[in-house]
Length: 181
Image (tube, rainbow, N blue to C red; front, side, top):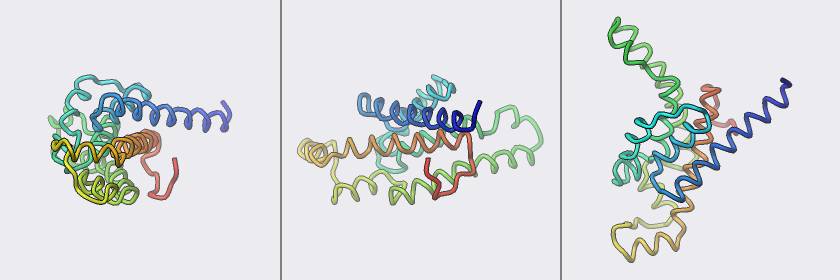
């Protein structure tokens, strides 16, 4: 296989992840689950139990506006590849800790990229920055304003772009904060 074909197929795969994440979150909501599931489907890492468990991370952990679900969902995807197997916990403590710390590295790189790209890792701060004010979707008139301002589209773009980045990191965990994917 030629280098150009490899680059082309990698770009196509990242495009599919990005498109699928966007489609899922626009249709079903749930930023964490949709970002994770898009990566799982396209990268053939499907795990329905993990995807199910990720639902509670959406909306900034249970809709509370804390850590962005796009970030937490994609961090789970990185954990599938770089995380620590449970069996390691039956072995030497030092080895388990060493593997845990090594697994942090790609996640921290994703975190730092995300923070730089979107100005924060906190859902409510990202939304407030985009809308210019803090609004709540539990208040009907505020929810209407949120939609008028385009927050759903904004969040879908964040989910799609973050899923693309994490999928690229499954192949290359050493991407620089400045590397485009």
